[in-house]
Amino acid sequence: MAVGADRHGIEGLARAERAGVPTFVERLPEHEDRAAWDRAVAARIAEHQPDLVILAGFMKILGEPSTTSFTMVNTHPALLPSFPGAHGVRDALAHGVRVTGCTVILADAGVDSGPIVAQEAVPVLDGDTEETLHERIKVVERRLLVETVGRLAREGWTVTGRTVRLGRSGDEPDCRKI
Image (cartoon, rainbow, N blue to C red):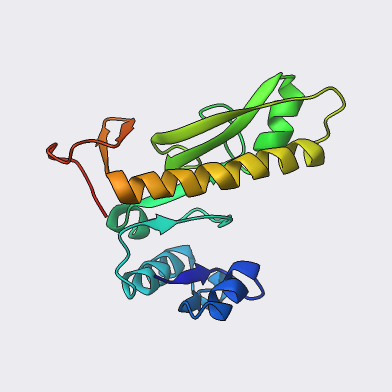
């Protein structure tokens, strides 16, 4: 287990350090280009031999070799495939939706394009601003991430095409248990 980040001063790093969990920081500006950073991040992750990589609050897109070497879980503050990208909440409000929510995905090299693991709806209330709606979504998103990662760890999962199934028996050839 370890906690990594792309910059210093992250509360997740501080929490991990207080708990005695190893941490690392791999800053993009310290590399000649994005590809070199991607390789360095993958190497740092690999040092810890993870069964699962959780990208909670990590706002950079990881490329190869991370996306092909590790199973990564990410969250997004919208009901994907609608409103991907950095402004999901703003885009949902601008579109006039009455329901939005959050999504847990198996991350890939795209922008919020991986297979969907779990989703939960959050109503858009009259008078919501981007900030008020995003705060309500974050509460649901955090709980859903913890629940989903727990199920992945306890029950395993299978992926067929873009469909992720939790709690399979383990007999399927694509089943992963950690």
